[in-house]
Length: 321
Image 1 (cartoon, rainbow, N blue to C red):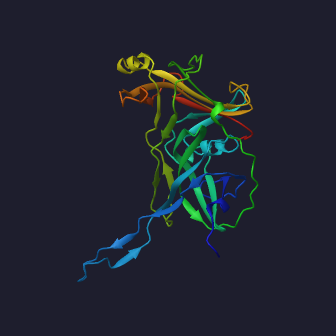
Image 2: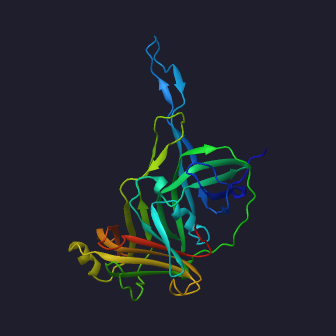
Image 3: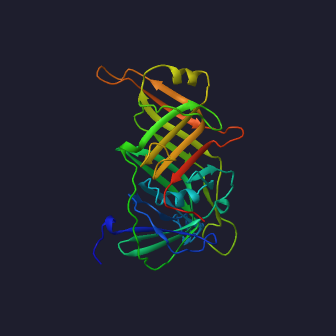
């Protein structure tokens, strides 16, 4: 077999009925790259037997880990977010994801089987959840990195993919809004000074192993949820700088839509709303004689009484179970 190119690969997702039991792919995801891998800490014996080198090795616990990077396409994004620490519901024609307090991956709405074909060789990963993710705008297109943890690996047969038409969110799709924090913030006119936007959430997921006759992970645990927004923008006034000093929280929204100026009017889109954000840093400097004066900030997303810390709405053709 000759060496293959990445472009000949494929990634498929199947929603598992039973956590950790392989489900054949029902949707195929166009990705940019992936690094899913078998991860094991083998046991190397340090017996004292007149040698100064390890004398034996035993297989130990293992799990699956890696990152899948892709454009944030509404035709497949709900599957990834549904396999993370979220609840979801249909709200105004979109699937809305909100954070929950689940302690482990089996408390996610569902787990995924991820099938990856590399050079016509099939890899089947089971019990997969998204432990963290990051949305960012790259060259005008909204992209997302999904950090995946899985319970194990199983040998599978090659699937036959069916590829959906791409539905990318390009430079003309994005608007950023600022408002006072609240359960349902009132956003008005889009801010036109942002130069980039990143939203990330980390659920501090870890593979857990328990004593049983099986080496694969027993389940994936979740820890503290850490969410933040990072960006820079043209420095125009001290409004948000003063908010940082006064510890005044803000609401921030990224709306990325196709076919309409609002998510309700759009044919498809992704809308990320952080209802309460505290500025961790708001940096302004004179970088050089010919450099624009920019403000760089990092804001931590925190809880709000009576509401959700953040919401992610995805409008597209996907209907989750």
